[in-house]
Length: 422
Image 1 (cartoon, one colour):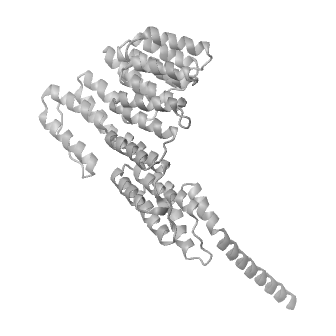
Image 2: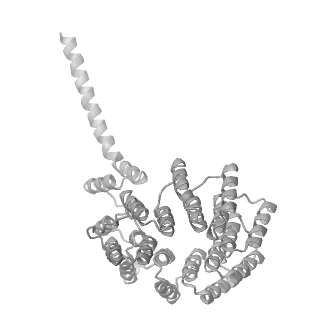
């Protein structure tokens, strides 16, 4: 009986020791679990652990770890949580250019441009947290994405005033913005300075940004000029470069030059990609050349190339432009079999095709399905719908769409669209 009690006593003692050891391990591994949650993008759990971690006697603020969490919150659509975390970190004695830039990036990623500018202004008044090239590049890119090109120019000029030296990547972002605005003279001025620079020389991304900007605006002359300049500068074209050229020539119906680029790709052993085929299909789709479009699509599939949402958008647009509306439904069904993601561009293509066929009931059915699938309509969506209703003189529906477009931006409650009777 005594032996049994001794064994029980030993087991109990061993169990207590294990519990104590586990408690010690738990205390020491809490920072590791916190870092693991950030790595796995579990932002809510990471915030909970952060609060627990701050209460521990061994707590020491780690700026790099918290910066990663702010970045994660920005990517997760939680800029306000990022702001709260930032303020808490500041209370713990952490403030630096990198932390401020992480917060600014969280705002930028969530289209809170004004808040990002406020953060920049705050940084300017803090000697230890002065904005650097990363800060400015991040904010400039956000302004480019928001098409606030005047602000891009102001930031670019401010960098020079504050002696913040741009990197090649910064120049590339500015060039992209100027290209979207059609500021070609300013683009060429920056390019010329880059060509002469010893520190910020143009790279392959510069080449792609510039020829894409000129190509999208239909300035084939400038696109070809700078393509030659980049090649002479020693920048070697790659598959993406040729895809950009094919796309630009295709939009202008310059099939001979398209063919020449394709031959150059074969000669240089640059592999054709999904983008190559998409650009070819798009070129034929624009002019409604269904036969050439179908041939290219068949060749794409035969080569084992992956099709994507853009492939099907081009096919839908092509059949609509050719007036073969019965094939649009078949292509939509084929996209379903390929499990193609139905994004805003996809629905816009289908709605546009139905509008061209003057089938308003189908237009509204697709628009309703789009919203049921939680696919956010954009300006293009509303533009297609308004044009379709204008042709039929449906002013009540146009008014509704204008209100819905405004509500989509402000986040107010939904409206009920007037019914169309077939």
